[in-house]
Length: 293
Image (cartoon, rainbow, N blue to C red):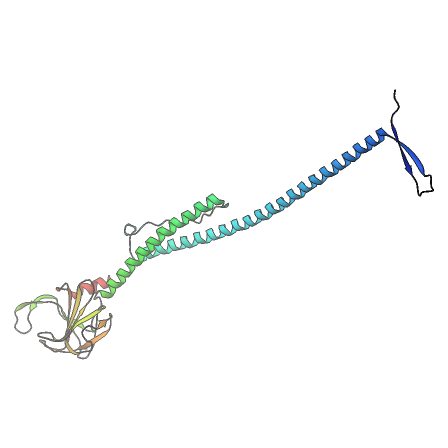
């Protein structure tokens, strides 16, 4: 069996010092090298493992922060969705109340959904989009209904303002609408309005919004005012003692337009009052009854 090769290692403190000599075998160097390589390999792998652990932990912290932020945003979206839902539901209830108060039926209006307080407990992207689409559909339907209600309400306001539904003067009826005996010659004639007996000088008021088309004297009527209203309606006020308005003047319901007199063909102080639709005389008492119903 051959001798194993050995290496001599001298260690001295100076040039005059013979030092110490150590004989080391080749196997020792080989084992030592293997140990060093293994140590450095283990150290390198440990550092790589630590680096990956640090990076994974850093990613975990970022994901945790992002999850916390998304949770807060989700809660904020849920709050906004709930508030929008409550507002839309409140508007739907108000729309229904307006519908009932105005006396309108559901057939004349676009449909609106009933209040729904449901809000998903978890709002992911799909459910959030679906919920807001539902709110959008409800708001569109509600907006159409409210616009329709507003239009009908405005039309009713205009109609009411243009309808001669109040008494033009304080007094009591002394002459009916329709055929009667003429108070001067006793012959049967058609009376196109009503006579309201009232003391001379009493205030005469416009019975609806409109525009004065005539203010002056006319045969049979004496001092006369004619007011044109909307929807083909007009009113006439005859036998006035004096007139306080002029042609083309805009008039509101209840405005003073003149005073009671006995001008024209009359037996005493009173107001001759007519309501016409497209120039055809109507019984003014019908409008008074309609206003009270």
